[in-house]
Image (cartoon, rainbow, N blue to C red; front, side):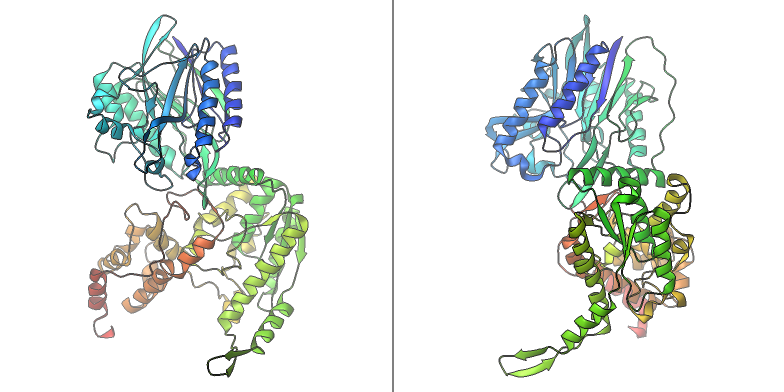
Length: 632
């Protein structure tokens, strides 16, 4: 019997001193519990998403130095941990010093070399170069090393042998992506299991949370354990990490699977702790139910944890939120009040002449329900002053000395309102009280740029910008029913038509609102962004012509006929949003605040895009011509 501790620690990216301090504390606890092996996550010393910090020689040396502290702590306990490894005599393909994403095994003050490895550590084999990952930019893979040495992976990929209490164990150690091999030409686990008799598989990971991802992991890893008839230990870290524009939560959810693929031990999500289990003995375990990770409670947990951790990291204790009487700002208010306490939240309603008594009343009701600080700062006087100032400004074309007056359109007046609210009031109030102000945009608005640059697009964090509108509504219900257990977000806010209230054409009392028809457009836009094979107008128009569009994008049946009387109407709508999505909205997203990711494709570094403008394929144009006929 071997007593194993899988240690789910909070990894602070770029702070090896803090991480090693936490690891040493976990090791001391494990020793007091007579543990044989303690396992830490991937890159637990440096952190994982570090950007070009990986190019700092001094930082690399520091991480290796802290790694020596962990090796020295391995007296009477076997320690498996992740860190950077450096071969100072070789170069990566970018000409910089060669670095490996490595798994180290230390015991009694020494490193244990994998059986056939040229180095004293396990090297990551498969590199994720999708979504937020950019491993090949910084690291050299085991596959590349094998090619360089003119070896097959079979000749170099080998287990770590460690003698525990006189019992020699063959440990199949892999790193994160090496366990997600479905889309690769080979599977490291298969190579290990086919060539060696292993006692257990160990996967150390730095795996960010994605909605529904853990359900897939349970299926994949349970199958690997069952197919190979050996237990599998998955160890993940908690914390938040970022690549500048996108912030990711790491939920941990470390899990042990027995040889039948049953879950026999887990760590709770987002909680740092040592968890213990005895393996390779005669102990019998009651299989645990598969945790469910695909409902709004998981989204709430990720948002709450991520925002709270982000605020702590940037040392922000007070938050300003502009509230309009709409659902997005209401959910943001309830969420931040839950995280920081109502006394640290200031809600500001900024009405113009277009804001109805209905939404002004709902804003007041929300603030009182939450018990937050509340202020009303009307903007109409300043907006009128700005418009008058512009319209009385002469523009002289110096080449001809012609003088022209500025014409302020209705659309520009809408933007002036939005910018006055954010750039003047919210920014000024935040600075005055020593806090920051939020961006309350949802993902549908972010997709098509339905926001004002330097206006409601601004803020220190876009906490809801990876949630579609229907998820914002789900979160509103969840906050009322399960977190506050009372109606803090008024039902009137949930029921009212979504509207920016920037003109008389957006009169909520008359049922007028946003041009985005969320029950349909949420799903259309999601197809543009989150589909693994990105959907384009060509796909959408083909499905429309085949009458299978709603089935493909997942929206409610009947919505296409409800919103679009003719093919011309449908195509006009499709091209309107596609032009924005691939046009001006890209520029807005580039300048937008960082987004907290929860989906399988978040804006920022996750969804990488260029400002190339809209494009329509030849097949799309042909199908469009066929559908429109003489109406083209």
